[in-house]
Picture 1: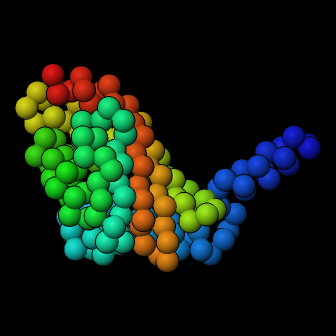
Picture 2: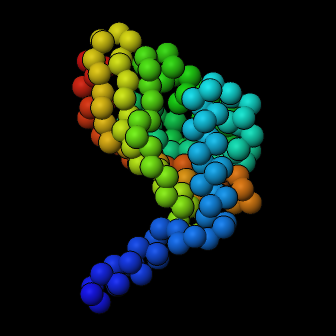
Length: 153
């Protein structure tokens, strides 16, 4: 019984335990995905601070610009390239976790088909978002980079 209680307390140190600030941050991050899903670039940009720092996973196809600084750099260096290279690129089965210190963790699976090779990916993904005053200040992606590398060959 004590072990279960300690695990619960431990989880509260990392994940949100009903903090309204964390809940607001989750709404902002969910809004990012909704904006991208809808293709609403202005709404996407509005949720980022002007000097947002964006990092793709090491060895990912689009990590060559890390860190991307500013929304335009993210759009040109990441989002437009994804659109040019992949069909039906989505983050499927998204689960969003509000965390302390203005962080939000999103887990799910990338699913897409490479336009040139026709190869599909179905890769685990985690996104770590940092916020300040209700805006995204940084992003870090973690994913199975090998699946993507194999899909483009």
